[in-house]
Length: 202
Ligand code: VGL
Ligand code: ZN
Image 1 (cartoon, rainbow, N blue to C red):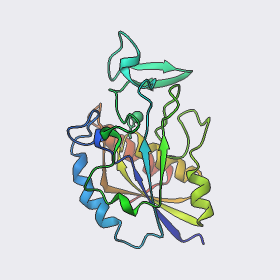
Image 2: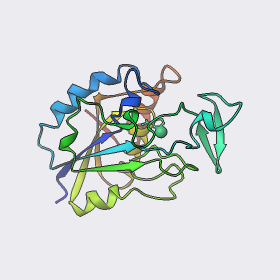
Image 3: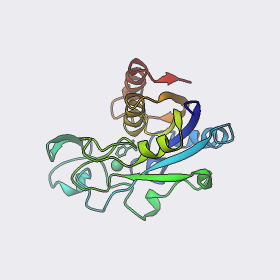
Image 4: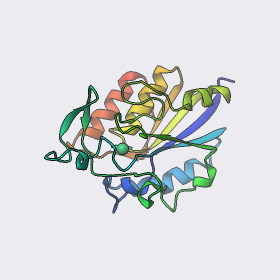
């Protein structure tokens, strides 16, 4: 039924947390908030995980002479260059130990194709392929998605915008997300963008 509610926990992985390769400032403060939210009446809880091969094209290390934070063109799309992060099967790609990951009905991996990045849990950045998340949610009758996780200005934003576009009533829990903030107001700009696109802020 359309009232069915899913919680989508975006990329709460060690590399995005303090001490990690691409640490989101204060990213760890959201973990107890997410654990508590997971005790609420969601019909379904799923997670996404950034899951890169070691030679992923979003890594500055793959582009000699380029630095982290620079923007390049990767297979026809603009790409911000990142430190190596969330490499498949490494501890940096694992969920934070204090996150109640046993609650996840399924985990959707993204960013496996070295030639294209994938911020959203639904589609890659060029919308070339999907992860199966939309079909999965639809098959469970989900009509409402609640989004939490990291980072507000990249993967959370992209996931929330696609959720709205796909027709889900979409709620962002602002106390359960934090931004990378390459520029100091990127997080606020992202939240404004999501709100204007129809995401409800909670
Ligand atoms: C993310 C940058 C690169 C994220 C993933 O999860 O927000 N950001 N890869
Ligand atoms: Zn990534």
